[in-house]
Length: 133
Image (cartoon, rainbow, N blue to C red; front, side, top):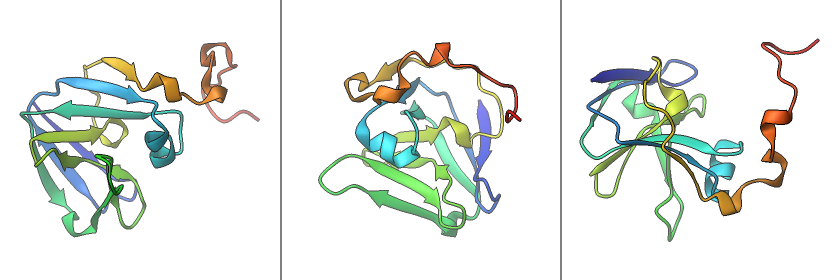
């Protein structure tokens, strides 16, 4: 399997060749800060290969000191991008950075003890297909 992705501004594009083993929705405080949202949605693979197609020089990496938390992002638009972790043995891909639909469904919610209080019972919140008027 091969799938492509890119950042919001289009300066960076990539391809991931191989299978994903899991898709975790991480609710830890670091991922909340990292994404500005209720959780991060990351795909994990110990066998896939990450290939930067364009803009590799725009990919910046931030590693939170004294942790395993890593974030790669486009230096132009700030979009989350894939990273190689655990001595390049693990490819971690933000699900929202993909340009194509994927068939894998979330494996699990993780670090739910850190879930944001405002994110409880979201299925009860009114939803709109577009921005409400």
